[in-house]
Image (cartoon, rainbow over all chains, first blue to last red; front, side):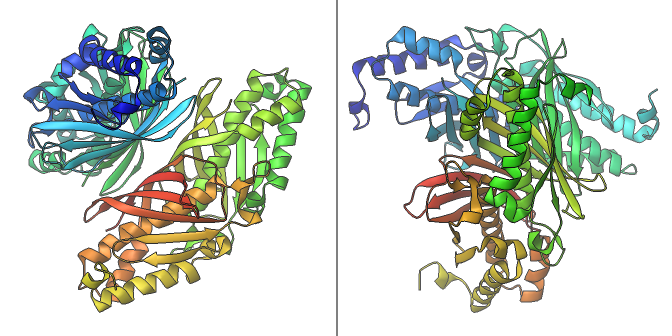
Length: 160
Length: 160
Length: 160
Length: 160
C-alpha cells in the first residue's frame, strides 16, 4: 500500500473504487472508446486507451483524433477534480458523494496539441492546480506508451 | 445558388465537396461518432450528430459527453479554417490542396460548456476570427436542434 | 432613455453608477492606465483607453502592449459578469452588492490576439455567454476607434 | 557558470543580454510597470515586479490586478519562446535575430488565477512545451516571494 493510499479511509477507498467502476462500465461514451481507468486514488488518475483504427483522425498520418485527446484530458481532469472532493470530505458517505458526482461538470477546458498522436497506448493524467468548494482547476497531460507527451490541458470544473 | 457560392470557382466547389466526402467517409473516428457534414462552403460549415445512447456522458442526466462536444467543435473549427485556405487560393488544384490538408492541425482549443448537452441533434458551426498564411483562429458554437447553445469554442489552427 | 435602461430600477441604476465610479476612481491600476468606463448598464459595457507612449509594447511597431489588451478584456468581462448579478437581484441594496463585488474574481481567461494593436483609442466590450449563481462566462472584444477588432477573449468569473 | 549557460556561444549570450536590456529599458509599458528581468538565458526567464499601490486591482483586498498578472505571464512566455529561437540558431547574428524579434507575437494565451495576488514581489517564469519553426507553446507561472503560486498560464507564440 502506497504512502498516499494510507492516508485515505476505507470508506474513501470504496468510493474511489465505485467511481472507477462507474466511469468504465456505466458511461456509454467511455465504452465506445473502450477506455480503462488504470489508476484512481486521491493523488493520481490514469485514463488509458489502446490505439485502434476507429480512433484515427488523419488517415494520411495514422494518428489519434484530436477529439479523443480532448476527451481523455477532460475525463482525467474531472476525475482529478473529484478526487479532491473526496479527499476534503473523508466523512461523506456514498449517497452524499453520488449527489456531488451528479453535479460534477466541466466549465471550460484548454487543450494544447504538442505532438502528433502516434503510439499504441495513450495515457491521460492530471494534477490539481487549485481547489475550492465550488471550482477546481486541473492541469492534464496525455502521453503515449513511450512517455512522449502528446498534449497538455487545463480545465476548470464545477465541483460543488 | 447563394450569393456566397457564386463567388467560388467550379474547382473550389469540387475541392470543398471532396473534403466533405473525406471528412464523412474516410475518417474512422468520424464514422464511429456517425457524424455528418450538412454544409461546407467558403462561408459556413455545419457538422451534425444525432443523439444516441453511445454518446451519453452522464447516465444520471442523459446528456451528451463533453468529449463529443469538444470533438465536434474541433472538427468544425478545422473545416472553417481550411475553407479560408481554399478561399485564398482559388487557383490551387487538388494535389496542392491535399498537401495542405495533410498538414492542417489544431494548435490549441478552448471549450466553454455553457448548458447541459440535451437534445436529439447537435450542430457545430464556426467562423474565422483571423486568418493568415500560417495560423487561423476560429470561433465555434454547438447548438441543439431547438437552437439552444450548448457550448462555445475558440481554436487556433496551423494552416500552412 | 434606452429601452434596456427602462427595465432597470432606480436602485439598480444608482448601483451601476457607483460601480462605474469605483472602477475609474478607486482602482489604482485603472488610474495608472488612465482608463475610462464610457458605458456601464445591464446590457453593455465599454472600457476605453487612449493610446499614449506608456502603453506601447513594441517600439519597432508602435503597437499596444498585449498586457494592456488582456487587462482591458479582463475588466470588461468582469463588469459584464457583474452586471448580470445586478440584473438578477433587482432588490439587492448597496451593502449586499458591495459584498458580492468584493468577491468578484476572474477564474480564467483566454485572449486571442487577432491584429496588431494600432489606433488612437481602444474600446473593450463584452457579452454574457452563460450566467449562474456561482460562475459566469463572458465573451469580450477589443476594437480600435475605426471599428477594427484587435483581440477577442473569453473569461470565466466567480460571481457568488 | 551553470551547466546550461556553458552550452551557449558567446554570441548567444550577448544576444540574450541585449534582449534583456531592450525588455527593461526600451519597452514603455514595461517601464510603467517598473518590471525587471532578473534572469534570461536559454533555459529560464524570471520577470519580476515589486508590489506597489499603482498595481492594486482590488482596494478592498489590496491584491495585484489580474491585468498585471496576465501581462507578466505574457512577457515571460514570449521571452521563453524567443529563447528557443536563439537556441536553435546559434549562428544567427544580431540583425537576423532582431528581425525575428520584431515579428515575435502572442497568438493566444490562457491565464488561470489560482490564488489572490498577495505579496511584496511577483516572479513570472516559464518553460517551453513545444517549439517549432513557426509556433511555440509555453507554460508560465506567477509566484510571490514566498514561493506561493498566484497564477498559471499557457501561451501560443508566433516565432517565425
